[in-house]
Length: 181
Image (tube, rainbow, N blue to C red; front, side, top):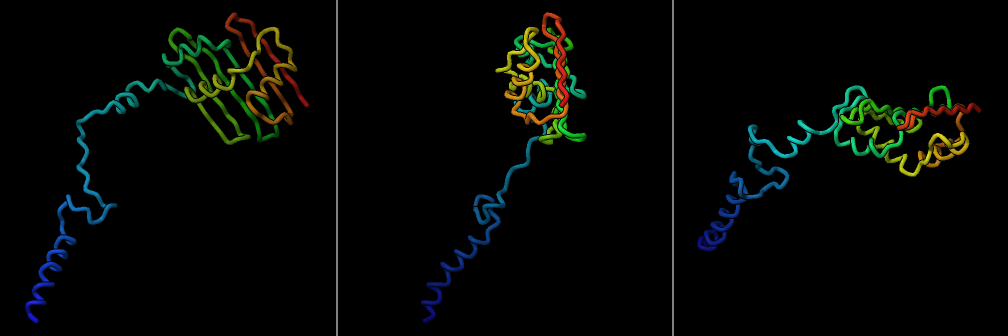
């Protein structure tokens, strides 16, 4: 009888000791993995990109971004200011102004209380650039056509109380549209 106890107790004891091991190579608790501490002196490519040259040198919407220079060259406006008022506390306001295209300097800002969105700098310019891809507004565009193109491209509600669009083309021609309901 004692032989049977020894026969079963030795494997159970070995199994129990393995289960209670402090050896990090044994995965007792998969959520509590032992991970070596990071090397504080190491520099990854992500650190270099994010900290040193993210392209977003934004200061209150003002940006110096050489990556945007090509986009700015393709953008037909030096200045683009759109304000659509829906109610006293509901408006869509998008502002873009080219400061120095050769150095990729511009100011861009979106204040959208309709969708509760605020963007500045690179994010605002990229959003405007993307939205304006299918818009063909120039110095010959009528007010009605400009308003319709903006609402189609920006996918905004046409039940506004005030619509204002001021833009300056690359050739220096300034155009202003205003509509009040």
